Amino acid sequence: MSDRYVWLALFLLGCYHGLNPGMGWLFAVALGFQEKRASAVLRAIVPLTLGHVVSVASIVVVATFADAEFPHNAVHYTAAAVLIGFGVYRLVRARHIRWVGMRVGFWGLVLWGFLMSSAHGAGLMLLPFVTSAHASAPSMPMPGVAHGPYAVAWLMVAVHTLGYLLTTTGVALLVYTKVGVRFLRVGWLNLDLVWAIALILTGLIALLT
Image 1 (cartoon, rainbow, N blue to C red):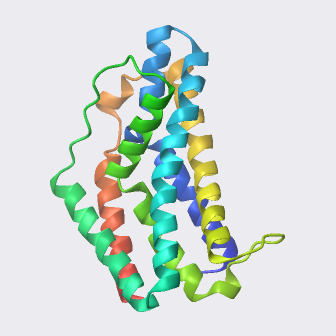
Image 2 (tube, rainbow, N blue to C red):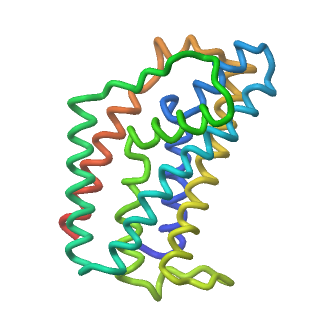
């Protein structure tokens, strides 16, 4: 895959996470309805995004460290096994984390965003990108970036986060101002199921390539 498509894939992966109501926008919309203000929706997006970033970045940084310190094949196949294993886990155990209530402050939303993103395995899907970047380091640099493995890793997190932030903000405002949440009962695709299958397929592809 060329550099351009790698970064595009990371951005679209962030968009997919932003589209999933279980990763933030639905909670932001609920807070907006509770306070009857669109500003409450936007105010919630910031800590939710921060929690998502911490969750994703922790996986990416650990994977980057492992790929730099241990044999590449061992890290690559371990990452593939983790993806497949977590995908199967999400298929058989798809329950969401229960939150104590809607009265939650900034850091509570950060924690919620971190827990929900971690429970969905948001950062795991970036593992193949991390291992591929290390295996083909000369093909991953971006113009103007001092591209050590950690610089590339943080750039991956930034591109992914941009997709997440733009999508979850857009969807939250659209649902709050125009659509409402009733459509979730009748017309919403089960994104958790799609995500679990995507994790397994990505792990299998990584295992075979």
